Amino acid sequence: MTEETPGFEEKPDVPSGATPDDAEPKAAASSEETAAPAGDANETAGLVAQLDQSRKALDERTADLQRLQAEFQNYRRRVERDRIAVKEIAVANLLTELLPTLDDIGRAREHGELVGGFKSVAESLETVAAKMGLQQFGKEGEPFDPTIHEALMHSYAPDVTETTCVAILQPGYRIGERTIRPARVAVAEPQPGAQPVKAEEQQGEAAAEDSATKDNGGPEEG
Image 1 (cartoon, rainbow, N blue to C red):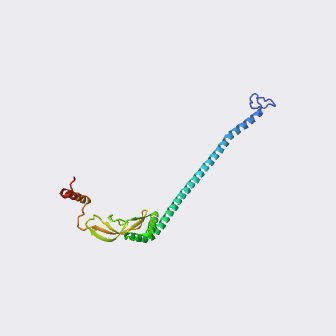
Image 2 (image 1 turned 120 degrees about the vertical axis):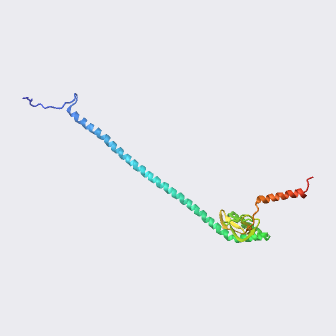
């Protein structure tokens, strides 16, 4: 039987130069150092999540701003387009009311009655109408176009190769590309059953006649 020495208790080994009381503070410091990195990681994760939310909100606000800007630009273009359209309609309505007066001026000019003060007033009116964009169209000899011509008279002619305006009864008027009144014309179509003579053949016949005239009785060069 082993005898135990009365009053003797076993104690844990303690490094030399250190007391047993020093072991407990070291253990506490070690646990605090372990907990500190975990706390920093949680805080960093929270900041990253907040940053992501801020970026997402910024992207949404940027998209909203871009959409509003696009809608505003479309609104401005629509307002400008409507303003121009209203102006063109107002000008067209005004000039349409002036067309009978312009027709009277044209007839007076054809009959030599556009003289004196009436001539000055008429020319001033035509100048103002031209500045507002009014353009007159319609000439004899041009092909008939149903989109800009209104045929009031019809006939046949052997010297035309297609439906042609042979007389302008009333000139047409347009503003830009918009026709406010078609030209009222008399048209002629090729004679039924007749073979139209081509322009090249007519020129060739004319040249042959000139040559024959010179050979037969033309003046001699001295």
